[in-house]
Image 1 (spheres, rainbow, N blue to C red):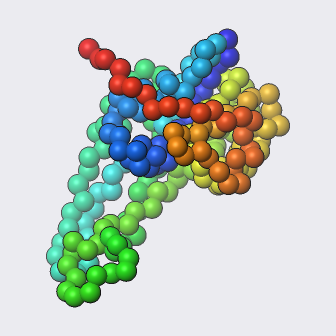
Image 2: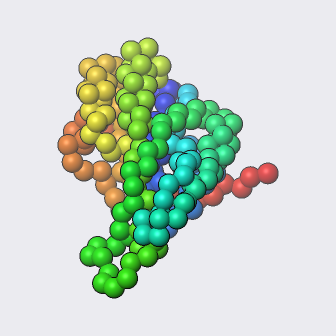
Image 3: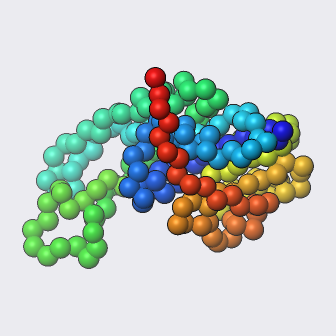
Length: 199
């Protein structure tokens, strides 16, 4: 029986799920994490990395009126309460407003033509440090890494010099590509999980 740790970049998983029109919920994340395991594999823990929603006040881009971003991150606390789940959070930085579509429409612009632009901070750092720590401690036989950011390559390279096997994930109709691909030991194709009945 191979002991497995799963690491999930929430931003990456969310983008893939929404592309396929799936509801991104706590149940979905939990079901997806468990669906990554194969026979003869035992789950040690799931590390989920994401940012809490931005809170703060700014001005709308056209009208200049005050706009307040409200928090709605209680779902991360719910996820952290699930079995085997460990939630690691970064920070969300507000970088201003960006057009919803390009080229911009002609005529009078309104606030509705823009959307907030956020940047995640600290996610890749935490994910990479955790991966390096797991490798050093040999906390599992395999790590299934659900991510696509090349910033993780230094930590992934460390894994390739250890007995820990590093497994990448190909999503339905969206195989991983680019430089990061060569740093996995093997790729694993997964299907979207079917919702599990819950009490």
